[in-house]
Image (cartoon, one colour):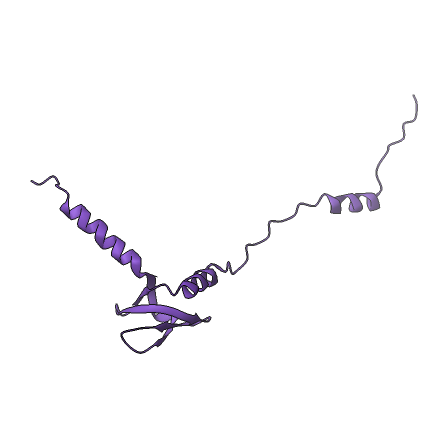
Length: 116
């Protein structure tokens, strides 16, 4: 019988190779996407007429002059300009969407339907 020599890599070599093969963990997504900033800037630049619905169901109309982390400034033609806290806003949308919805609703009401 012949003597066979067992070939093993040295421990130091394994550590070097292991670091290059390490699986990278997927990075967590950023906390802020800047979507809100983009939306406000777009509406401010165009002075888009907006409808703001507050948590107490009050409806305000105007355009956004500026915003910060916790509030927006709403300019109005039919009243004083307002500084509105964001936590008191339920939702907001463009005023033209309200007009579009009314036209669609009216067209649907004018269509003959199945009546019993």
